[in-house]
Length: 276
Image (cartoon, rainbow, N blue to C red; front, side):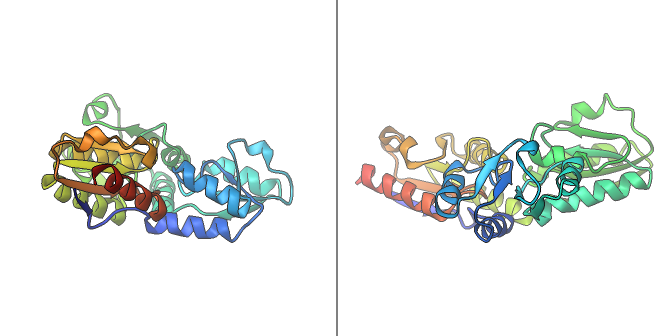
């Protein structure tokens, strides 16, 4: 089996930064999952005693709260500080950017359109910074139902497809007098997506490694599946199946932005073992 890694894959700048922050703050807790990778979260707990809670009230005065890479709602950040919790903000700078844009543009009287998944923690945080009308959409069809002002500002979830974002932006530009478009899709996401598309075109089986709840990993899998129908999204080597590689010769590997190198290495070793 010929195994090839995508040109760009795995840990992005924001995740590397967050992991380093967590390691430097032993005996702390993260508010929400620091990143969307359970194995790496387990490692932080085991090696650095960095816990995890999804409940704001779990933090007591003087304790340390590490804010997840995806950010948290503005009111929750304010509440932590009000209660004299030591807040260490590990929110990715690519995520704080749309937060600030929503805050600034809504303050100037713009309606805000966010292209992204309303249930995703990143979007919950970004949305909270808008002071006026704010709408979250995933498809152009959802825009048809909105009664928007003439002044509209649009941002994107950092891990979405650029092509889909352009559809949203173009629809708004054609129908409103003033549209401010902010491309907040992070460079690492774009580079990983471009790389997985190129690799999947020349592979007869693809393995995409990352958390099942990781938005950017799911996007990589969707792009890969368009070019290579035999594309599989896994979290760990335990999920790899021998039959995936029957009568296959070229296996491509990519990984989400929250996937550490040690898991990628274990998956490759597993594939080599069962295809030897």
